[in-house]
Amino acid sequence: MPKATYKIHPNAETPFGSIDDLLAASMESNKPILIFTNDLRPNEYVAGIVAMVFEEWFVFKRIDPLGRADGYSCIPLDIVFRAEADTQLVNRITTLWKIQGDAHRALAPTETDLLTGFLENARQSQTVVSLEILDSRVYDLTGFVQHLDDAFVKIGLLDPYGTVTGATLISIDSITQASMDSLEERALQKLHDYNLKIGNLT
Image (cartoon, rainbow, N blue to C red; front, side, top):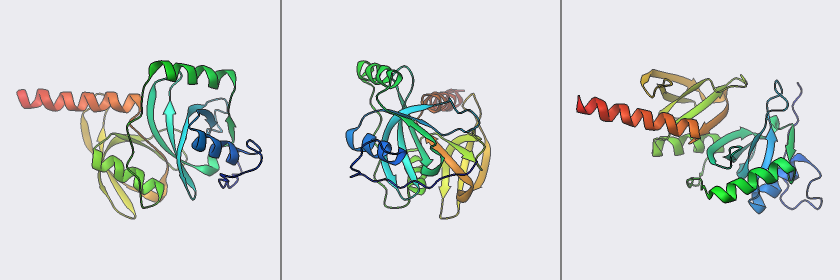
């Protein structure tokens, strides 16, 4: 599928004339929207708020369908083929989010490109991340960022039970989406911490 290149126009005169404008409006107003990025499942959406944009990437504060804070994703701008604001579904998720009162943890500002800064934030905070590789449309691996440089990132891999199963080295250029601090990733982190605690007691 051909991919367009989007640029954010924060001061656009027509608020929702393009996907670019809708993403910018979400960032400025702190209002949830839906984005669609999986061309193999065109009705699959992610709800959330645009937190920051830099060059070809943006960081998205995710909100799950029940209104819970669902971590952050770092996403290329050019894979968003559809976005929605102020629909019944968006309003439902927004209302549930307000009722839940669930806040996202703060992300440290980055002085590098967004993806590298995103991974460095995860490394410093030792937060579980998930990475999509080469446009696979799924998160291919999950774990802790152990090392990061300009070309590669080393991930300590976690299995579904929170056990470290080894490490892998990935070219940063091959990463096409990244996620951290989602509900699933927080569950894995708790399992990992529990395994360490039990291991230290036995």
